[in-house]
Image 1 (cartoon, one colour):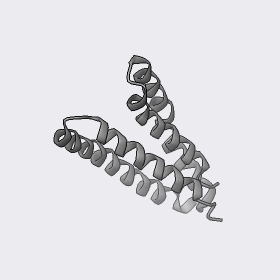
Image 2: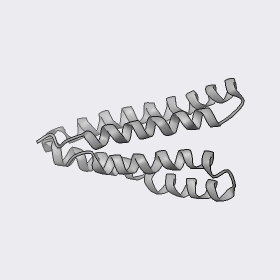
Image 3: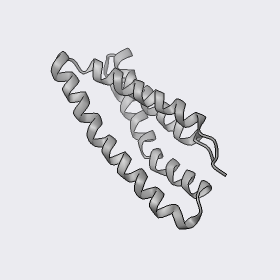
Length: 117
């Protein structure tokens, strides 16, 4: 009922984001894509589970709507920010490092999330 599932998914995505910076051959890219792909779909599932376990049923729709808005905004801002950083630095590495750091910081926050009931 806490944020453990979300934390696990975010750690996996964060590690997958940072992996190509550490393993620079095709193996690193393949493993990164696999980690990202496996864990990315876990985020909505973890949020849905958290909402169902922590909110009354009458609030599920509103809570999912709010999550969907924040998720969508993140999906817009993240790539734009990474692209701006890449344009300025002429490298993908700083943007990927920042993205991995944000994901790992989010994982820590999710891990600290206690059940609301």
